[in-house]
Image (cartoon, rainbow, N blue to C red; front, side, top):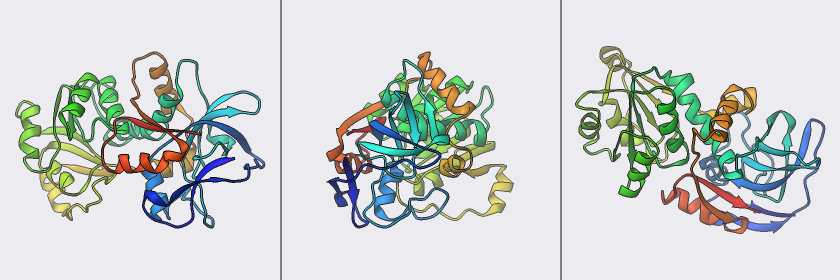
Length: 320
């Protein structure tokens, strides 16, 4: 079968197209013919050799096939969404049965893939970690991206009083407003606090969702109000944030929490009330998962470079 694999760790150029044997499903597994595979920052970390610890970390000798999520069909014709630690960048892959979810009619492959990693992340950072309450103000960083675009919409769905989006270009900020943000601003660290307070009518904010890290996370802490919460769930800047003294959190009555979806998927699988709600909202058109560019499987390295260069909007797909 056709697949993209890498024989050494490195940047996107290590990915190469190859013909490899079809995978064989074992007990408790199902063979899926892949309709589309999703592209994630986790895939980039995998080929760079950075995704080596934690539950469900990719293992085994090189060469490896990256790819964490697929939409496809089983041998008996079921259309499914599947989560795999690796192996998704291929015409076929094997998925553990507990990590297969049936897709309802009216949800496209791109929409479904947007909901698995990015959608569940957005749901949990708002519901499980930040515990957003009606009327609270929410700032969403990188609001035109796969997770950010869903977090903007879900914050509104969950009753946020004011949703403030940050994005790196006028085009991306316009998209965030179209998705339901009340205000959209430049997310650069310089002048961050002033722009956020201005967008929130002069008041500090209740919740900030950050996937950028580094200086942006440092600046975000200064914009939190009394009992405000910052949730960090990524570090796309690849820069370290400053050390934070616990005494500062106590004095200012603010909290910082982290979230990583992969341990939760390893523990419980992707199915359950959160994904059911996301699929239902999408099928009823109350939620609009952003589907971005589609690439032929052979152009996987281009997809990675575009994602790293922040030239993308929404969910990126590979078509075998």
